[in-house]
Every structure is written in structure tokens, then in C-alpha cells.
Image (cartoon, rainbow, N blue to C red; front, side, top):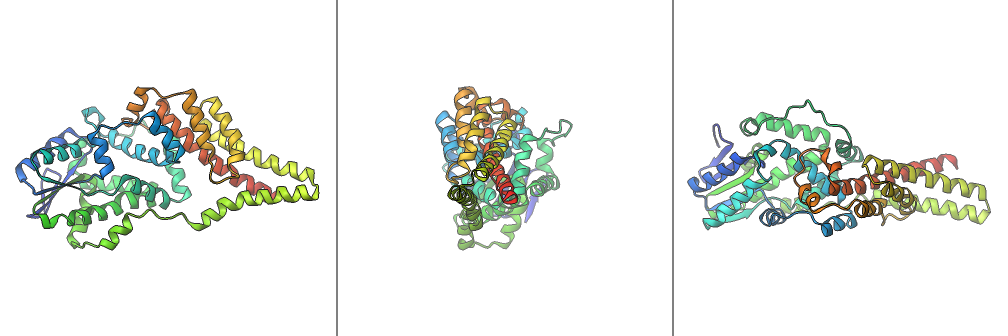
Length: 388
């Protein structure tokens, strides 16, 4: 295995070259086109899945219908997670005026123009995000969401694009930082994808010379996996499956409302009106207060905050519903995102802009209200158990 100095290129052998890119760098766009023209591969393997490739080619943007669908399907945390990761990328090079993923789109278009076969070798983005979200514990999810709520360090200096592409130790350090904040998410977003990309690239090797275009942060991991040159279809299938929720989680989620309903029924049966009033008060206050507080942290409209407070005590009794859905819809109605908000949402490069962008605010209200409602239900249950 050889490495081309001064450029983010690793030659696994004469038939396989890895080209590392920065997803927001104009230099990477030019380098990709140059490598395809000069190296003349038979296959260009690109770190894209089908849905991301289509979104780049169609210059797809979020719209009103898409935003409503995100709220309804409970995907707000996933979209926020994806947006946060993209925002961190854009912080590194938005001043170059390059659309994130432009070098991948350039690889796709250049290969098609030259009639070179294109292989999309990344795992579906929704599968990756769902695996990351399912793998994360409650503490890790709090850290991720706190990254949105906490103020940013204005004095922190971000590395330059050229430094990122030439310094693999720096890239490794950035990857390790992600794993420290959320180890489970880091494993899915980095380690698993390195393994998946390597196996998918390996599948293309029988077709001739392969140029693999991928983010520079994956170069070290993917090249290490390719040294083993193992293709395991069973392992590939495992990496494409979204893990089912822990059965214990479902027991807890349904156990809480059953406990509350059971106690209410018992107090009605025994005529203990005082106890009945107390349990309903504890349940309503904890649910309403914590859900409303989290909605306020998301800087929701007062009507959205009121909706969160009213909906949470009710929706917490039915795990199939979520208070954030209702608060998010109200936020969407009273502070409807403009066409510019929806277009700009996927361009945000700083966390604080999620609040100033109305589309981002809707997602924040939805996600944080849901989190608050869940915490409120747990606190209310603890209060009821200690009281009775």
C-alpha cells in the first residue's frame, strides 16, 4: 500500500486507489475531476447512498410537506442529528462557496460523462442514523441535544481545509472527539461505515481499476479494512439492519401508563377522592412543567409551549402519541417557515442558527418537547411511587 504525498490519496495496489475529500472544499472538487481524467478508472466508487445521490443531483431541499412528514413520523431527532453533523462539516469551509457533497456530485457527473461505471458504496443514510440513534444510551442522546442548547465556544479555532486533508492525525483526533461525546454513535458513524465502505469497495474490484472517492476522515479506517481484503455478505447484511428497540424499553413505556391507570381505577373503586386528586395532580404537574420547560429551551412560540404543557399529561398515557408532534405542528402554524427558511435549513453552519431558522426551530420544538414529556412522565412516576 502506497500513499501519494501532499495529496489525500492512498493506493491499495495498482488497481485500487482511495481518494480522500473534504465535503465542502473546492480543491476537492477539482482533485476528483483530475483523478478521474488522469487515472482512467473502470469504476468510480462514491461515498454516497442512493437517496443522498438523488438529493444532490436534484438539489433537493426541505419543503412544507416534508417538514410535516418529519414531525408525523417522529424523525425530528434523526433530521437534527444529520443536520448537526452536516453543520460541523460546513463550519470547516462554507467560505469557499461550495455546496456540501459537491465533490461527490462532481465524481458522479464526471464518471457519467466519461461513461465510467458508478458504484454507490455508502450505507443508506436513514439506516445509519437510525442505527446510531438506537445504539446511543440516554446519556449520549442528552449530550447530543445539549450540543444544540449549550452556547458555542466562540474562541475555538477550526482547522483549515488544507490542514484537514494533509494531516491524518488531525482527522483521527476529530473522529476520536466524536466518539468521546457519543461513543455508540461514533462507532456507527465512523467504525461501522469504514467497514461497510471497505466491503462495498471490495465488491467492485472484479470490474477492473477502481477509484474510491470518500471523505478524508474515512481513509485510514477503510484502507485498514481493505488490507484484510475480506468480503463477508452476512456481515454486510448485519450492517444494513436497524436494531429493534430493547424489549425492556417497551415494557417501561407501557408500564408507566398502566401503573397510573391502575392506581386511578383503584382510588375510584375505593372512593379515595383525596388520593385520586393527588395522583392526577402529580402526573399533570410534572408532565406539563418539564415538557413546557424543554419547549421553552427550544424557544418555542408561547402557544407551542402551552400546547406542550396540555398535551404531555395526555400523550404520556399513550406511547403511540408524542407531545412534541402537537407542539411542533402549532409552532409550524404560528411561525410558518418561509421558502427561504426551508431552502436555507440544509445550509446552516452554526448550531445557534437552528433557532433563528424557522424550519430548524420547528424541529427543535418537536424533539425537545418529546424529550421533556418523557422525562416528565418518569419524574411523575417516581413521585407517585414515593408518595403511595
